[in-house]
Image 1: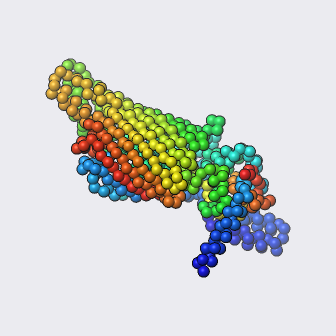
Image 2: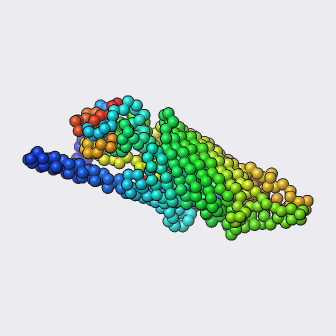
Image 3: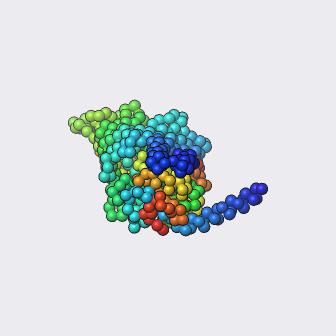
Length: 140
Length: 410
């Protein structure tokens, strides 16, 4: 039984990793005034709390929960920080009252749900999860 | 926020809406939107973060070093825990309190930070309340062991801050961008009072810029400062002042270069510091230099450190060198009278203030999961002929220090 669960887990993990390799889309709600971004650096700055406006609007990044495959790819390929570095980075900002780490809301669907309801929120999802509730402002 | 519940609400309402009329569909959708928004707002309103260090430290000599570290294993000196509450009053105003319990203070809990912050927009913000002096690159997270390589930041540089880290002040910060660099400039004014010293009007300025892996900072602060007469350093200063005054009086002169012991005799203290940090996914390199200059007889001191670490996955071995020394030994030791008894007494006191300390450290940090790190460190400390950072004159010039900590943030 234990073995079967392990196999099932391994299958799920490998499927989700492959799934995540499709690419990352940074998204806002479909009706958000935020315009597409060409500079990857701006995305990094938004998710590291260094940039608080885009296209003249206040923005608030939302994160995916630790362990989500999309999150791993996003931080590895775009932000280029390990989870450990990220934790240390936010500790430095949080304990100086400078900024709070983005709120973790869950996986791709949760991010879509949340950004669709607030034009100031910005999140990232797997490319395969894009639908008409969101507007893609950056893709990698 | 409970996202499952949120998703469930969305599912239920959207299922319900299929059977409803057009305008009630819209109504329900709006309700869901409002509900989502409210849940998100609630989560944003109060945030609780914390950090802790559990550590042990021991050195070779019997004499107390750096506030009580001896040849017996010390479980308290490095151990501490803190909770920080951030209450967001509205989207631009927040109140932050950080409570900390330190082992070396019998785990008594004190408010390390306690301030109101307001963003004016366009990068301008203000803080008022109990703040941390922005003396160093690590000042503001000096207690957060997790955010630094060592088990404890080098006392050669951070020793000055440890004694008087926080004060009551108002701060103005301007965040801006210079090309691809993110920068901020900070100005503070406040009153600092500790068990040993008082600075009634302290001004501090800080400039910091960051690009990618590189951070640079420079800071300057100044304040007329005096020592509390009943503190250790105050008691010594009373003796030094008396000797100088007597010597000058015997020559028919008035001595006005005292160590300040009250607001009228306070002397100008200036503190200057520069630092650079390079933190990539493999290398961590840091360098920091600072200089304290005291008018009158107060001891001037320079300090610096260099540290380099390389990450092999979850392991980061590091090597560090730090040095501090008093820089006005000659001035303070100069004979002031031809009376050998008076001069002898003055020089003897001044010698006890002279300081020189080198530290060579080797350590290993192991991040066994994000948020928890284990560190072990060996230091070889050489204090020359001086007291260095010992609490009393050491019986030998060198000592070895071994320390280990578990640092976490949550």
